[in-house]
Length: 371
Image (cartoon, rainbow, N blue to C red; front, side, top):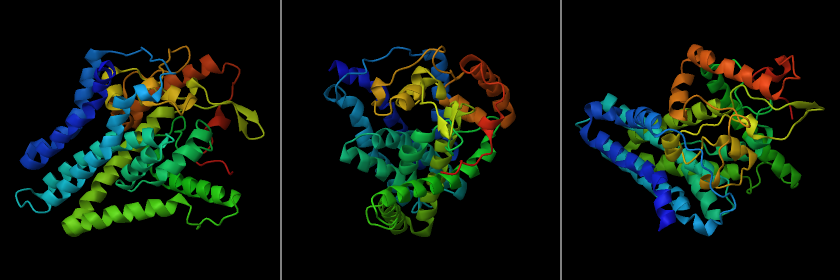
């Protein structure tokens, strides 16, 4: 019972479901409720709730984490019913105009990006076949299945180096980062899986390549949207997917902006440390994002489940001035972002790498180094 009560704050994401339904059934200004709640309300709560710098015992066994794991497992059927139920509803309701329908699925995209992709990120790191399947289903619903391959095979290996497309370079604005990362992440994910097949003496088109599963699941969801709502239904599914992907890459941009691992020569870098990710201890947004903001520990110990992720002081990891909801909004305004974050990056360099005078080689072009 005590564990269930402790886990309850992480179930707050379910409260977004009635918000989406209310927006769809009422239309008008109600379609703005989802961004207002996820971006602004949680930011306001953060300002009052303060920081949570307490750490759970990282050796806590899985059997004591049932209620924490359960929310990530039940989310796929919840998101499935919301997304496709609303596709069926809006394509049959003559009382909603085009802008209202767009606003509804913009909100659904925030739901599937802020919660769904985030939960898929937690699930893809687990060994359970069920959890990995749930991750694949959530990613396929937003047509971003390759994120699993890119994240596990590329990002975690090359984070904070020029070989990682997702690690935002110093002074690189989000609007330049975003189109770059969309193409480079797909390419690096495909190449990583093809290389995996080659190591097993198989061609890339072998049936064991997960890209076939990715494409099949995405096609299945596209066909379901067509069946429920025709071409309009497919369009709204794509709208929510586009918003979800944008939300994901905004977070990716924030998580490692300007941070780099020390180059040791011969293409080798120091091991990943907590200092190579931006950390945020804001309480409410960590409830919503299941501790994603404890990103320093996630990269340091990728197999840790989210309730056991540790937070770090500024002596060990760089700290964001606010939680992800605020920082992602700031990232959409590059001059403001640079004004806030560039001095922090320079301070991070002086603190952790005072021996490096010339950083130009660490911010080379926004393209990955050849493998």
